[in-house]
Length: 388
Image (cartoon, rainbow, N blue to C red; front, side, top):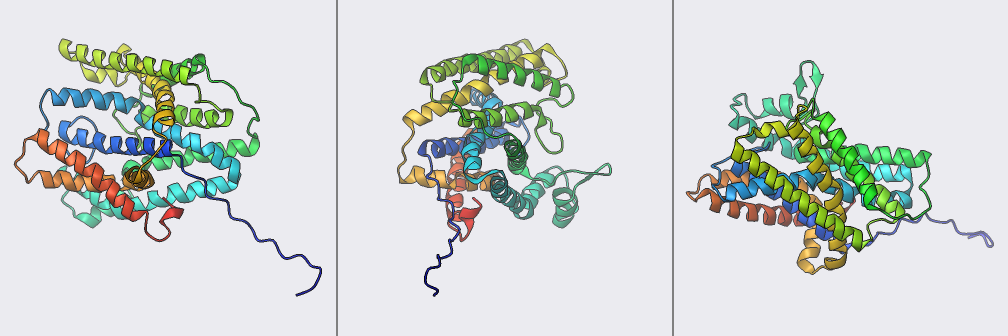
């Protein structure tokens, strides 16, 4: 050793950031909601999913349809909102390039693994029910992995991981913006008028998008009619994290009251339309006044429910016992794995002579528990923490 020389400095790894209990608890609730939403589709036949079975009957049928409709208006926007809320501090710590590389691993690798390993089996069940008779590998090669459409290439059959693909695109856009325009070094106050302005933009954009792609349809295997809500959710999450928003309990309570009114109005509109024989498809798009009403109600829920829920969970659910901690850690893996778990349980339920209401309740509970249990095992695999 040469006396008087300085030892070489080793590159320090970034410290692991402590997990927020409230955010983990909210993610757990949202992932459980996704599982239940797909179970509702299976037992009502309303919506796009892999399987349908003997539908439940009223009053459970009406209750589930109303609940799933209201939840579908804000659910994915809330996912993107939370993603944006945690993207801002992550980019600030790592810088734009390292941030995007991290997103590429944590979003791109799970998406690729789902498409390669899980999607072929799920899509085979779906296609077999639709009359596919050319075999598993033919389906995998021509529909799941390399699907042609009129000479153009569709994305792979990515199932629920479309969310990861969209989030990766939004993350790339955010990293690019912050590489050019530095983060504003100021704290501002979120006002109700700001939320109202964003709501107007979301409603208008959704109405216009649905002129060509009605609500419930897909474009390039994406539920494009709700894309304005995704962008708004991610943007509000990012900007709110940068400017210190979402810490005003008064605004949050007001947002909660407005959200309750909007949810109630949605239920009333659907109930009245059903009683008067109005075609529900009119609310999906096509430039009708009904589609404008649906877009407006959705926009109100998109900008109010997240503000309210984030405040509620920060104040009242910022603690975890052992089970909640395990569930929060496994939530991402549960989201990735829930589709094959639920498909298997639905298929199994068709061999049991239970009333459809009992089958729905049993399978829904088992699917939520099974997805999180399997996710808890997966996150313990070597190297899993670098991805999920």
